[in-house]
Amino acid sequence: MTKKQKKVFIRIIIATVLTVAFCLLPLENPYIRLALFLIPYLVIGYDILKKAVLGIVHGEVFDENFLMAVATVGAIALGEYVEGTAVMLFYQIGELFQSYAVGKSRKNITALMDIRPDYANVEQDGVLVQVDPEDVETGTVITVQPGEKVPIDGVIVEGTSTLNTSALTGESLPREVAEGDEVISGCVNMSGVIRMRTTKGFGESTVSKILDLVENSSMKKSRSENFITRFARYYTPAVCIGALALAVVVPSVNLLTGQAADWQQWVIRALTTLVISCPCALVISIPLSFFGGIGGASAKGILIKGSNYLEALSHTSCLVCDKTGTLTKGVFEVTHLAPATDSSEQELLEAAVYAEHYSNHPISRSLKEAYGQAVDPARVSGVEEIGGHGVTALVDGRNVAVGNRKLMERLAIAYEIPRQIGTEVHVAIDGRYAGYILIADVVKPNARAAVSELKAAGVKKVVMLTGDARAVADAVAGELGVDVVKSELLPGDKVTEVERLLEAKGPKEKLAFVGDGINDAPVLSRADLGIAMGALGADAAIEAADIVLMDDDPKKIATAIGISRKTLRIVYQNIIFALAVKFICLGLGAVGTLNMWWAIFADVGVMVIAVLNATRALYYKDQCR
Image (cartoon, rainbow, N blue to C red; front, side, top):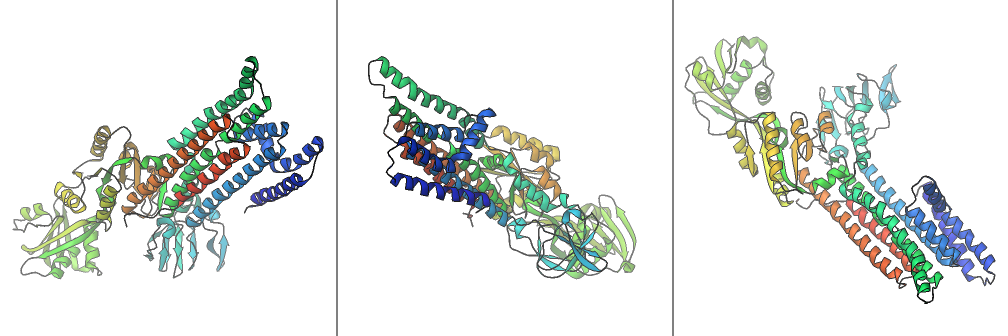
């Protein structure tokens, strides 16, 4: 418990003991009885009365504090001392429970997102000194020892290690890093000592942006939360007017028609309806449900920028995906070596690597990675690049030509047409065809499962948009089970396709677009929901999208939809349950069937049940695993 909660708990104990003691005393004098019961009443309710008065002063009259104050003061004025004190007592118990539940949810989220670093190790005069990360300037070399959090984004300048990224991605798979690798803040260094040069200030680092995003997500309210706010704005005054009419109009009519007015009976009924009508269950449990859903998603590496986006996600019927970097790795790899009859795979690859040695093209980098050996520049000379065709070079004194079909046709060399899909790299040595190499953007391991889980989650249509050639796009779409594929698109064409899909969907359905958050920014902003592959915290992704997947796993999209729908189910359950109980009890209270004790249950009891139900939103178990 916090200090504030402990104080309230002590007040509850004192008020309870005094109330029970005074009930047992044979008090005949009404003034002494009033004076004694005012003690526990004020002990437990002075802060509620104070808030009610301040609300009236500031023009915010109709809230739960006002309802409790009027109901309990009225009960005491009518001589119902025990009931008036009990209402305030149980209300405070409910508030304490609600405060504890919210606090526990926040602590759970904080524990799951415990990525804020406490210090950074900076070397001063040969000694490591712990300094506040906010005081570390960009370009400073810091040391991260085993077991410590990486405090600021940077690049490793010395050492190798293994990083635990689970706080960011929700996955426990470690990441190997070495000199030259970029490292983001929030990861935990598991093994070796590393020295890294910071590339950002603490305020601009990944850890700060993530924490700020999660902490401020409650600022963007969902339609359900806005409905409750609007509902309470009209509901509370209406109930107060109804209670006033019950207390004044009904007995007045009875008096005019010659019946017994029985003012006290009708005033007690009016006060009972005020207690019943308190909208605490809705006002507290709905935001708590969304807060829990956002926190639970954060723990799985899914950052949702507001409860409005969490709610919209549950209505997603069409998911549009970019191909490169979303469904595929976005990194070209050599997928097939096809040497000619009189060549070997090693000779084919080596010739291509040396001819492409001076190029920084992605194809060249893919060839070098597949070769996996150091290249001796002295073996290469006479490099000539032919635009749109490829390169020629002298490698160990032999003429090597590496490029596409156009280059082979230009050199009048017969070549083989591959049956597989991919970027073709044809190689010729001394005018003789040596074979071809296929390079492709490899499909992510979870991509097919992601599409399957999305359909199981209720997404009606999965669409893939790409600028790649039609043959490549169709092959990837067929492998993944995508419903619709559009290829050879420019960025503007993607926007046009999304607009067509937006026009075709139903009025309550939502269209979500998934991209890398950088090249697809126009489409991300045009869709109902923009979901970015965060690439472990890419700045542009976090800024551009409504939802960020921190580990680039497309399966997390189905998880996010599942969390969203569970959260909405809890919200609707609380709304229906609370309103049903309220209106039933209001009707029964107005006709005198329910007394003040039942009114307490209708208020505090419903609130406790709704809050308990709301905390379930924090936990989600994937259904499609």
